[in-house]
Length: 183
Image (tube, rainbow, N blue to C red; front, side, top):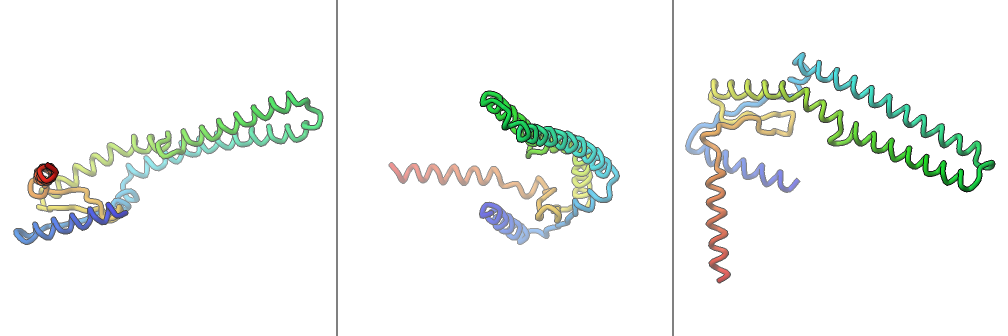
């Protein structure tokens, strides 16, 4: 969180210092409105929803199998040998592990559902980014923000605001001065 604030302060300083010399032209978009209005996003959402339902159904079936296994164990526990109990315990634990693994593979942070959403959304996002860049150049915007994503910058005029080289030079000079001070 502290890094985000630091970045925001640095960006604000950069914007205000640049604005002194020239008038800044800003705009914003709301990507949530795009997601709600564009038919392409609705199609992706339906496809991802269908896939999620398939995964949920399979997870439910695996969960039911696990519960049946547990119930069978309870019903027969008194009649089983210690070896059979241990065997069923191992089988139960393995089924439990497989269910957790399945859930992670399908629904996890980089799971199949997430990857499919990215795969289907990427061409749409590329088209949107190209359109944003065209509008920005045509109308002379310096920055375009996305209000749905905490004010994330979705376009910046590449000619006037990239200070990466200057920052690298400054840091290199600072490092050299520190090394001289140690000698």
